[in-house]
Every structure is written in structure tokens, then in C-alpha cells.
Length: 475
Image (cartoon, rainbow, N blue to C red):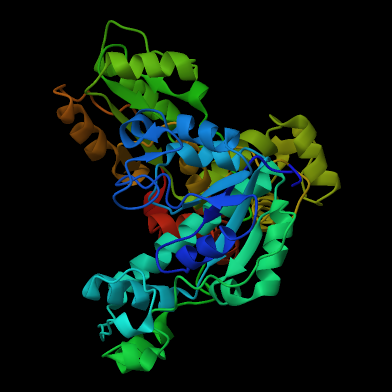
């Protein structure tokens, strides 16, 4: 047989027909599927103690040993893998283009009901219909929602890994596993020389009855499923690029086990002043690398990390004034002025802008942000105006902050933080003055608020921000 692949894996879940698919593939010369080879509770099949010379204990110690044994075995060998199997195996097979991927799926309602019946009857396989155990089960909406979420999360994980690796998979639905033509196509995909001799006869479908005869509260199930957002209509679209963790921007106190994870265009200077006052005779620790930050974390086992959110309106105005209006980002400013028609005067004439001109320029920037954060512009999304949700997701690639504070109650939150590490809280330094030339309270209009609410919809929803009020202005 052709050796396009050295190994294959069937990604499936319980009650999706994976036993029947395995039995059919094992009838093809040169193909061998070894069951749930990486199930944490057994090796391949219940009661088995070894596989290809590898014991259960040896596999637990080093799952790579079993993968190597499969690759070295005659023919093309594979196994079935469920989302709760040994996670150490997943990256190995997903990253390997010489490992064929087969993805088996089933209607999640069918698989959920079948799983409930199997658990209730104790019958997980059926070789003869005469021995069938039947039962009616209760549909539980919350339990099914968890079941569905787990299935979807695993499928998304597989899809993304295949996309990143430039690979494809052979998709099989539950109904396909009794279609010889589809099974022959799968055999050709795997490089088998011969076709499937026929459907496996050692197993039969356990519960062929319609759902309404298997679910005792079928009406309640219909009502619960009708409430599910099948097409994800309530999802907030997110086309904002993923951000890195920004580790070099993190700052630790001189001696206290506190780590500040700044969100750009927030009250960073004010927090750093407070952090410096916490240990009067020491310098703040900054310019971390991932390695040096890990060392700091290990050296401070009782550490607390924190970040501070700012209202999106206040933050957008800060970014506009300090990065764009005043010319800090010179090249980007010119692109915004020429390509996206923001009414920005030359930097030398900014001080001459009146309130109306400033308001018009900020409104244009807010209008630009709506499309910009949706990935509709050619301009890079800077950390100063990226959504705070995206910034925190970036942090999470390295570490999540223990505490997420709000600027409008910063003094109380910092005092609580200091107390949590047994330190008296210093006074909160005065906030940095608002960027010139006009205060946000003077500039704001209902139109600008609406534009920024659309641009930062993720932040408003994720963090519960309300409309900006003059009382939220920094004093």
C-alpha cells in the first residue's frame, strides 16, 4: 500500500459510531485501528493491558512510545481519539502531516440521547438485536448545553490546528459509516490498496428508534432546543487580530509581590506612581522577558497580578490626542489624514484648533475605529486603541491578571490589593491631566458616543460599560 501516511487518527466522541467505523476499517487489508489507544482508563479496549508491546503504565509515562510503536508496526496503524483522551498526544498528531486525520461526527442530539441510554442500560456495544436493552431517558437542557459546548470546542480546536498546519481531514458523518462507497473513499484517502469488503457485521446500531420514542419528555426537549441559538445570531463578530501578551510592558513592585499588566492609553502613570510608593526605597522592576518574568513569578509564590480598565470613550480620546492629534505616530497620522480623510491639521497648527474642529476630528477618528477594529482598513491596530478585551486575551497567552480593576474606583481597588499582600496602601497619586487642548466633557456628543459604542461593542458587552458620563472624567 502507498505510504502517504505513517499513522492515522479518528477524532470522534462517545456514541458517534466510532466502534462500527473501526470494525469496518479493520476489514481492509493493511489497515489496523487500535481502539481508544490513549483513553486514560485503559489501553485500546477495556481489560486490555498492553498494545504493540507497550503497557498501560509505560504509555502513561510516555505516550510517544506507543505512537512510535504504531508508526513502526506493519501496514498503516491508527487509533480513535476523544476530547478527554491523553492531551499530550494531541499536538503530536495534529502537527504531523504524515498522520492522517479522520473526523467522525454525529447529530449532537442523537449522540446525547444515545449516551444517556448507554449509561442507563450499561450496554455500550450490540452485536445482535436480540440482546438489545431499551430505555427511555429524560432530556436535561443544561446537561445537553454542556455536551454541545464540549463537542463544538473540540471541533473548533481541530479545525484551527489543521488550518495552521495547512492540512485537511477526511470527514465522516454517522450516517456515512454504513455507506460502502464512502468507506472505500476513506480507504483510498488512507492509501489502502484494497476496498472495504463490506460493512462490519459484528456490531449493529443499538437504538434505531426515532427520538420521540427514546426521550420521555420529548416536548420539553423540543422547547429547549428551540431556544438554542443554532446560528449564533447573538454572537458579537470579532475580526480584530489576536494580540501578543505584551510581557515587556509588565511592571513589578520593588519588593511587594505585585505585578501590573498595563493597558495602553489607560491610567498607567497613576498606577505606576502608586506602585512605586508601595516600596519607598526600591525601584520598580520592568523590561521583563518571558524567561525573566517566569523567574520573578517563581520567586514570588504569593504574587498578585492586576490590570486596570478605562471607559472606552475616555481611552479613545486619550489615544487620539496623545498618539494621533499631537503627531506621536507621524506616519500613521499622515495615512489617516490622506487615505481616511480625517480632518487633521499639521501638527504645528494643532494648538490653533477650536472646539468644533477638535470635535470633528475626534468624531472622524471614532468613525474610523468602527471599521478599523473590524479589520476593514490597511492600518495596523495599535495597542493604544485596540479593544481592551483583545488586550486581555493577549495577556492570557502568558498569564491572566488576578484582578481586573476599574479606573473610576481605582483607589478602593488598589487599597484592597495592597491589603491582600499585607502592605499598607499608599495614597493614590493625582491622575495625569487630560490631554490638551479640550477636556473630554467639552468634546463629547451623542454621535461620538454612538460611534465608539459600535467600535468597542466587545468591551461594552464584556465589561458592562454604560454610557460615558462627565462624572467619569479624570480629576
